[in-house]
Amino acid sequence: MNRRRRVYEGKAKILYEGPEPGTLVQHFKDDATAFNKKKHAQIEGKGVLNNRISEFIFQHLNDIGVPTHFIRRLNMREQLIREVEIIPLEVVVRNVAAGSLAQRLGMEEGTQLPRSIIEFYYKNDELGDPMVSEEHVTAFGWASPQEIDDIMALALRINDFLTGLFLGVGIRLVDFKVEFGRLYEGEMMRIILADEISPDSCRLWDIQSGDKLDKDRFRRDMGGLVEAYQEVARRLGIMIGNEPNVPRGPVLVQ
Ligand SMILES: Nc1ncnc2c1ncn2[C@@H]1O[C@H](COP(=O)(O)OP(=O)(O)OP(=O)(O)O)[C@@H](O)[C@H]1O
Ligand SMILES: [Mg+2]
Picture 1 (tube, protein in one colour):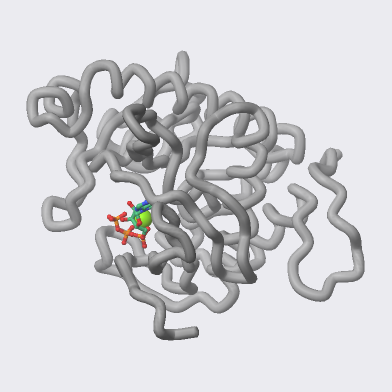
Picture 2: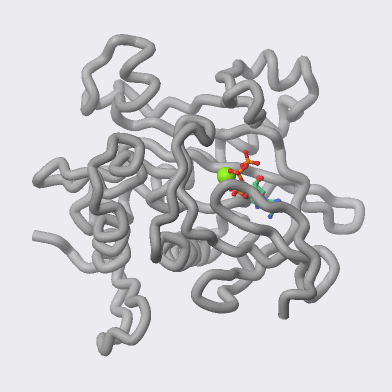
């Protein structure tokens, strides 16, 4: 079991060699980090929740024709994925001002943005993932103009899907981060969604109370992180562990 080759160990996940060429096993750890690893903790149960929530979202995206790396869930903490060549960008989509955008531009957190905004950050921990423009992305060859177009179109489709999904269960999708990769199939190459979508990578606010149901609870020392992630899973109809209820899909929150 433990003899499989570890391809990469990151802050929140481990990638192992998969059972077939071109596949990997993505293992979700309980580690939480923030502010470029300056803050670090183990939060029991987080990995299991993120595995299930990310599975739920990626499966739905596959179903509506947004290509993703997700193949199937293997167990409580692991999923089988397609290996891609990761594009070294964190693609952030924002609907509401929060976090670094609110700080940088002096906006009040919670201000609705005039339209959805896409930002690119260069994935480089030593540099603290600096924000970059499309000019940097193409000049340094991180992605071609055509790839940027594909990435932006996919990011907006994902945003539309997620906004509606969460709105239906009483949650406001403030912003989220995604990663994309190149999948080579013979002569063909296409861009697909990789990594994860979970409360670690989204800002999710309860519509009625404004309560944060995401990793900001950890960043801001608010506590109750696992409970918040559990609430997201519960509202999406994802049942975890030995719970007697059968999954029902999204539940409208009054
Ligand atoms: N389908 C995939 N194929 C190859 N690599 C992937 C795939 N999906 C995600 N990854 C990469 O696997 C790693 C997941 O680990 P984790 O999220 O813990 O990394 P991290 O510590 O956040 O570091 P990073 O800054 O590289 O994201 C990331 O580097 C991510 O880019
Ligand atoms: Mg990561």
